[in-house]
Length: 181
Image 1 (cartoon, rainbow, N blue to C red):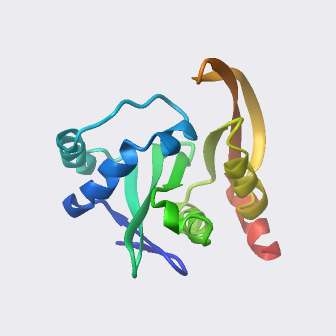
Image 2 (cartoon, helix red, strand yellow):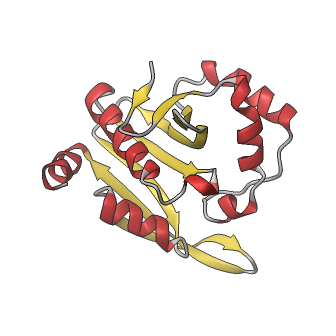
């Protein structure tokens, strides 16, 4: 089953997507703006990773595609917690030419619809490194998420410590956001 938006489709990762994923997984601009720590990866590592995805039911990962351009980005719902009906969400548009065209918003809204209407989740969480002001504004102003907290000195980048903003959206907030969108 694919997740359809207005301009995008979110679908399972296929082996033919690995060249794009490999390019993005080694792009320092992308990883500088994301949390966690990342090491360069080979295509072989990505192939091994892809073969494990079907067994991992608590971490769902997809590519974001457009009909005209094929894969343009990556999205996920991970750390799925069925008892508490929550998950952690991540997204990036890997193809720099496709950024700023509304595809990220379409993908986030489509994933929220899928999470709340299809999976029956009650909340989604994400985190954003403090200097990634573009993502912070995107989630809070264009997608209805709220900053729910901050962790001091959570990320070390380019010789200094940065805070981590904790963001979330509940199903009720999502429904209210849709009424006003």
